[in-house]
Length: 150
Image 1 (tube, rainbow, N blue to C red):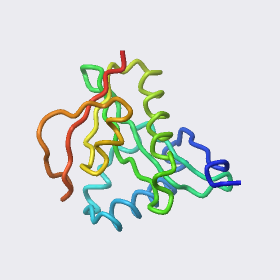
Image 2 (tube, one colour):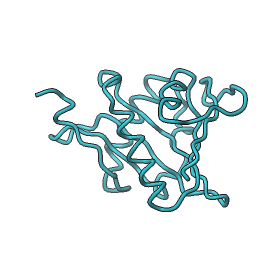
Image 3 (cartoon, helix red, strand yellow):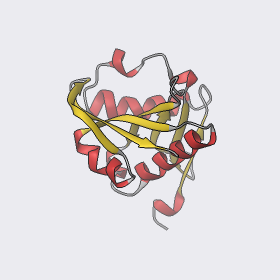
């Protein structure tokens, strides 16, 4: 049996799953990508819808979050992280689909995100459209992307 056969992606709950979600984000963003710790912990996690990918034994492999919708009905997806040794196996896509389903279920009109340049094609394959110019966020080059949910 492969890791993909043993993988599940589910909605996570803060604070119940906070330790696993924080460990994933610490490893990917703070340790691997050198994101400053104060930028990673923005105080918004308790109000977000989270997704977690994990093996059947509970080993966490990836995460992402969906913020509450803005006044116009659009919501930001962020903190998408998959452990390096599990990338390119479809885990990020499965996490993204769970978050998109959650946005649709609550009636959001669109989702947007700040894609690291290396992930622009990943999001484009799921229908996201690049918007605006490149910008630096947390020391990493990004581009805004948007997906209407109608």
